Length: 127
Ligand SMILES: [Cu+2]
Image (cartoon, rainbow, N blue to C red; front, side):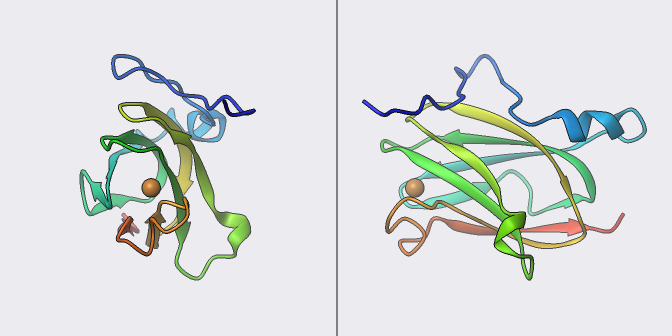
């Protein structure tokens, strides 16, 4: 058993982990939505590009092993990394964040997974 209980939800339900910042501005601007699917050993995005600003990102583990997800703008410091919890197979989590224009790298940080192909790049448009 793990000491930490990840915030996960069944496929039918969604939990927002860190939506406060996104919600504050979503009254002015509807959030971008993105579904990120992880499987051994690939990361698939529902769309290659989203608009800047508030974003709701769902991470779904479609694989047979646990996976997690990290998201960071290219050139940003590690402190700017958005972390999704490690998910069991079939689990889904939703995280609210704000995206600045640029290119973002997404990857699974479990040992060896990034090197085996679990990474992708997302473009965030300025408008
Ligand atoms: Cu993984």
